[in-house]
Length: 193
Ligand code: ATP
Image 1 (cartoon, rainbow, N blue to C red):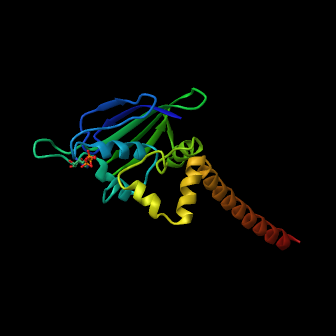
Image 2 (image 1 turned 90 degrees about the horizontal axis):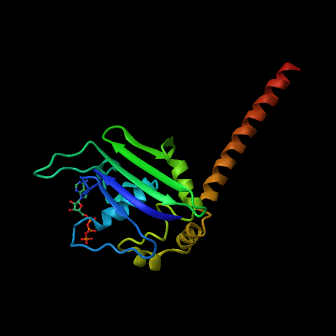
Image 3 (image 1 turned 135 degrees about the horizontal axis):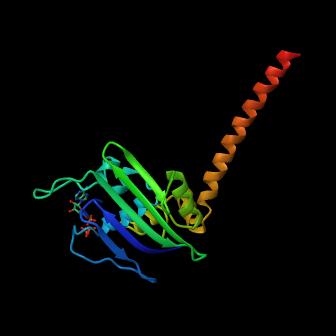
């Protein structure tokens, strides 16, 4: 998957709508301290379905909404749109929007989808909010200090099989539900004899 464009509006320090084109190859973001470089990486993670406020350096998820400054009022919503092209050349537009008091909503190519659908789309393409391809500050030290199980998780994300674990958990849960229904059905049938 190739990320082509990123659009932000009301996300953290990006109060005005901003659009970035991401060209093939290595992308570097440079700027003075506090100008919003890390916020950009967090916007990519966020639109991919990141749900941990801690990894957004926030207390709660609504903290990603522009909080206002002395001269500007706070915003009511934050929106990030990621435009990508998958390995088959198909275009993918993913939007995540959060409104104060209303939580997050996701859209893929204009249709409403669940957070899980977005996470699985990226996990299957060997990327996503926890992808080792997104290297934030302190990440290298974290990899060195990681326990074997955590390293395995990173390798699985890179290999694109992380989504399979989610699907396996879903399938196991459906199987358990079906077994419960079956047992109940047998009880009912026994009662009819
Ligand atoms: P450094 O080089 O020091 O790591 P950076 O370029 O990575 O800095 P960021 O950490 O991305 O900068 O941006 C920090 C800025 O974003 C701070 O000025 C902070 O006030 C601002 N910021 C973060 N969240 C919000 C928010 N919800 N509303 C308004 N501004 C915010």
